[in-house]
Amino acid sequence: MTAPIAIIMGSQSDWDTMRHAADTLDALGIAADSRVVSAHRTPDRLFAFAKGAKAAGYQVIIAGAGGAAHLPGMAAALTELPVFGVPVESKTLKGVDSLYSIVQMPAGVPVGTLAIGKAGAINAALLAAAVLALSDPALSDRLAAWRKAQTEAVAERPEDKA
Image (cartoon, rainbow, N blue to C red; front, side):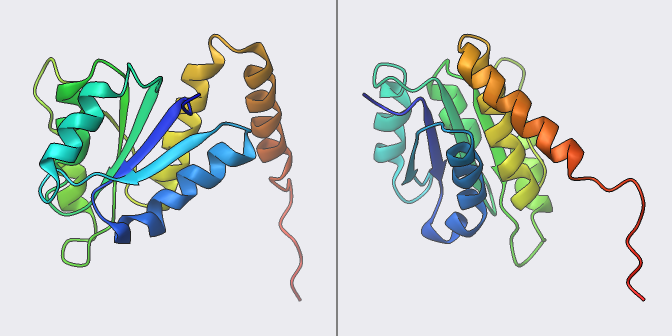
């Protein structure tokens, strides 16, 4: 059986950011496949993956990309599955270029766009989990427990470091 979530990225270097999505999904007990699918360097791989993603059993795609960041939008244009885009921080423009590229999709080609970097990768995983949890009560319970633990981890008072 195919994992319900695919994590795709434009290059191997994007894994430093996208591994946070994989780790979050793993913590929630959700299987995910991770792969490099570059919109620019491997367009045939992208087309084959995105066109066949639903038939392969994926339910959500998390797409991380830096620079021109065309991967999330191109994936969304080729599948009706939900696509969550994670802007990967670039050296030149700190990920703002990636954010603008992903968030400015034309009407009719939606990409759920997250924050730049690690926070965006984690939140993309949580959104994907929430989508799957709509039809999976056990996952819904795990997600609720994860969120409760996160809330309980916030101290009410600052620690005295003196």
